[in-house]
Image (tube, rainbow, N blue to C red; front, side, top):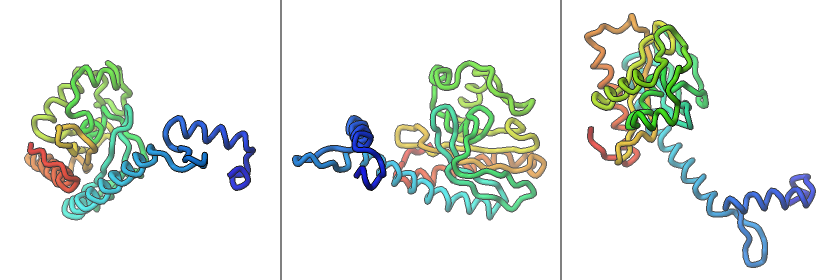
Length: 225
């Protein structure tokens, strides 16, 4: 192994010791190394993420094609949302984003959707009291107002972000919930604010919520909301 990796035997042994400590490698009865049990966790996690992307892509492409929305799917990693999927719409505004890009939890619809189900104490532990980073003059900068929006989102099934991340852009997000009601991921759509009449505000939110629920069902989650 040291020859193949072009490393000294001592360096390879240190790497193997570290992998073994975390169950990524183990020794058989003949003291040969093989993959450990923790690798299975990585494999299952990657498999679940691929299922999420495949299930989300169909719904997001349908929304983009039917309504011209820019569409996104993502997960929470620590105190940020990480995009997994970006589908550009046919509308007049294209939001440039790529899988792997981070998003703020407090200014974006997808970030807020990933906070659904959290208590104010849990949000405080995750992102603090504020003041939070202000992307625009409309960005939420304090915990109380953010928590109020999350409570409303839990009631209606979707989140909104109007001029909070990008001026002139309206976004809707909705969590993809597991059977315990916790977000495993979220989706969002974005469009120019001027392109949407106020009469359609709740209609679009329901479109996004219904798409998120269909994705959850494809992943095997059956919680009704």
